[in-house]
Image 1: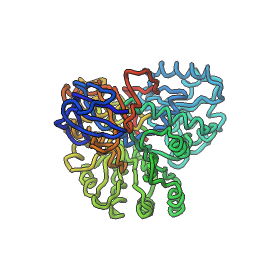
Image 2 (image 1 turned 135 degrees about the vertical axis):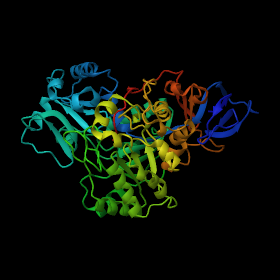
Image 3 (image 1 turned 60 degrees about the horizontal axis):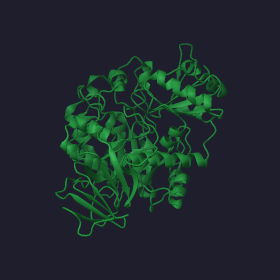
Length: 549
């Protein structure tokens, strides 16, 4: 379809242009100019007051997981515990399946972040039930699920996992990290049709938000979710995958034979097409809320401890070296300062540098020792920001600051420090951990306050990003991380992958950024979302700021 977008503010992925028109012909950006086109297109949109950007590139998202959960027992949009329980009750009444599965519950709804089987039993008396937390680092199970899996006081904590227990030692119904697998292993695995349906539902949701490309942060079996690799391949083959995707192949926590694992992943490496698998994902630690994020000093709560390191220093250095030699980019989940430091040390050990052509990155970067901030730029490591969490939400107040203590609380989400150190920045949502709406994340990056509580004090305001830097990270910055040649910039001759916002944040008060809505999404010159047309999308709580996977 040929299209002219007129009288629009244009952000090209780097800066605002002096032009006000983009002309699309045969799927490509044919011209960027001022005033009407010399040869008008079949369709013209006059977008006065709107902002045209490259399609957003979500550098860290779980599209198939989120899509599947939106089609299962999805409580991500629940308004508090009572609403969540009513959603579960209604779903259990209607499902023909033996198990109730799904997720999206908030740790902030429970004392210490730990729900109990007793509460869940009230609404799922007849179905074994497992519901993943929104961050996918914990599971809430009922008594029927505990009985089927024989979890009791005598069951030891698995390596890298925690079974939350009562004073008598009996499981209470909350499982953290690797302990989730004790129950999820008994849940019938989703079939290919279910995974494919989840992928397409997830793609549809992201399209409504102006996202035209993404990095799927776990391509492998994880937390009861089936590996989506084959679904992506088939969706590309059938033409159903219209977005550009880089899949991060999952590096198992228990991997011992590094050479064998690299060989296995190399067999799954795809370097061309819409779906590429050029990245490998390491989850180095857990999350602060469950005190499983790896810290250099003990947590300040009564239980203390340093959190969880899933890999030794030697393992990281050897596996990073082998993967880099095989041509992979390396992707690390790191929340605690010790995990961030371990990743940087391993990158340094393999000689990572800004000129090596690699796209290694560390995602989440919640707690970062100030001494480590400049090392990102020195080593050429991208900081992949999930900005929605960098604010005083309930989890930050109740579950993070009390266990971090004052010094480490001031080390959180140092976005501004990264920018001042010339670190390459990318941005992503981690949906379904939290909403995939880029404008809400950009709002927090700029204001350091929650989208629904703009009048609250900002979290470490010196670490805010300016609007242009945040937009650049969510478009061109993320596209560079994906090695994309078709997304992230508005340039003549490039495919028209674009997002049209209803208003320009450059003309608004910064406190209004979160209210901006996407109205049009274009992929390869084809409209895949039009706010004026009927559409369906998975639900997602705009206020959700759960922590990452």
